[in-house]
Length: 267
Image 1 (cartoon, rainbow, N blue to C red):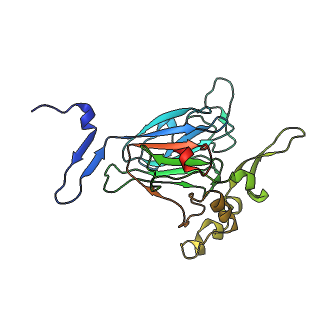
Image 2 (image 1 turned 135 degrees about the vertical axis):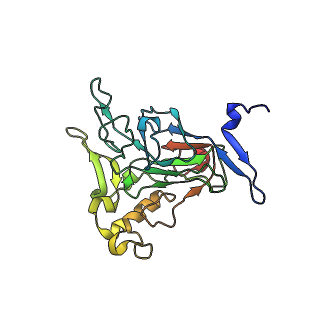
Image 3 (image 1 turned 180 degrees about the horizontal axis):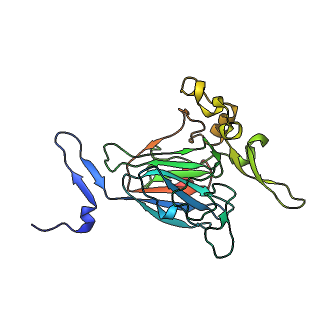
């Protein structure tokens, strides 16, 4: 009996009778793209028991993309860091204005400091179970992000759009994260904290007496995020947010989509 070549062994089709076919894949690819007019330092952190991808972080100039491979069952999060500065020859002597992971270029599994827009991923090798992903600003926002599968699914079920507004431009003073503009210059808003992160109150953090979907209904602050980024999770029990439950071998993660809120431009 002839042996199957390695390429075919990476994708095995199992026919189960009765019932649907189950497809198990050997891995997936994230196409991480930076459409921002400034550099972004994407970062990746796995959930417990899952491997670190791409050393946990890398540099991505404007207009560039990078392929990141992952196991078919990988779970974790991706986010973009901004305003990073590297000193001397030590690649780990870095500090980012947003999304920083202990001052390191390669986060190596460390979770970034909020506020940062998070892409949350839960992959399944079994197509019948389905993979899922969402975008969260529960801890705050720093960049708009769009996520979809490749080939693009234009039905919308697998597409999470970017933002209709720049959250940093409408962020109230009490939530703003700013950087000094220098002598005589106005400070720049580089991120927007969630109310939970800013105030630490149970009502904003959906905990304690507010730890259920019935008692935690959002706030004027979460509605600000909802208005700007309708597809994102604006608080823990945000039932209006989009969770894409789609199987694919390729996913596209784009920072600063071309025209925020325009699905055609982003795909």
